[in-house]
Image (tube, rainbow, N blue to C red; front, side):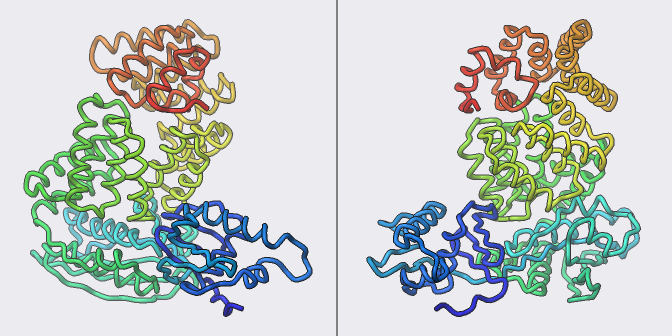
Length: 575
């Protein structure tokens, strides 16, 4: 018999991790459905890599004595299901080798790791200079450590946005631990003196509250990325995390920076956190300045790509202008630093929505999650892709993981609500939209999802009330287009026609996205006009086409043969 399994044992091989304690098999952090007997076969082989595990041993382990089963067929079935889950083949095995008539052997490299994955949050660092003009530097260290620690697969790291949501709240550490569902925290301070930097950090356990580790670091500003990697490595070691060779190399490598360019980048990130139009515009200028001073600054390329993609997606600028620029910037970021998960996630997003390249989107988002399993942006991007393109239930799990990583974020909460809506879980979408609005009462996206869910449930008066709140929050074309659709579905034709006329009037004065026109015409039942706008969307390569089968605004179009034809032209299956 095999030796007793260590409590909490887990095994890592290739892109997979098998947690013997929870009975879960994951690939790149995503849970894979696997029948219990098949999982037991896997663990039996992983406990003795390179050794023969006989059929008799497996049968004895899988089925209690005295229980009658067709041993031969049941064991064969369990092994076959396991191979299917691992995409392994008996004739050319990568993992499981059959030793004819005797048993099986695990032939791939196996690493045993701790199955107890600590959930860690980095709290905002204190600026010991006490100069508000230098706050951006303390925030930069806090952000960088969150990202660096997220690259360690053995840790689950809470997003900086959820932590920032609690900034200024007078809460005790146990209260913060409850809100973030984290058990260990990094606290620290930053002191900037000329071109020298001192970072002090400590690791604190929430319950019972106690210090686990503390250390101070000094460096010149040009070595800030190098020292941040070293701090993250020491923190992970203090939590007793096992590194992969790739993780160790990334955290330990020297990374000198162009000082002026990096300072401009850090100021941009600080300004973006203000969540204001003015802050966003100034951040844009800082990122452009960073790249002008250092065209090889990968992080500046990545975050500027994110800015452009958001401007295009929400209709603030024509997508034909911003998406090519976003892809150019993201591609450059990946070329400069292939280990940036944020760059891969953005590249996947714009490859989908600009080039309609579904395969590259899937590959890039998988790569992003592989690099940083705690990258909530990559998780939610993949969730939206799976929900919209495939109606894949796995999208819900990805969204749930993103919520665990970033429980207090507006973006993740509202995106998780959209994912439920795309999967046509209207009650679930409504619940998550309400949760978003509880956190952020003026959330435009929260109102959009809530109103769409009410439409999906044929609750038209409630949909109108919700979209009226959206228009009161922001009377942009998208908001009034959604309201016009709700008016039409509720039989308030005059009100819907008034919205149509308002959109046409705005179109004469400047840019208006395609989405609101399709929404209003579909609600009014003017299908020819709706399909005219969809054809324009196809010619402009507007990504709104991918949403035609996923949201209630386009539901009236489904009965028309042109709907299925349009779905076929963009490569989206009809469900």
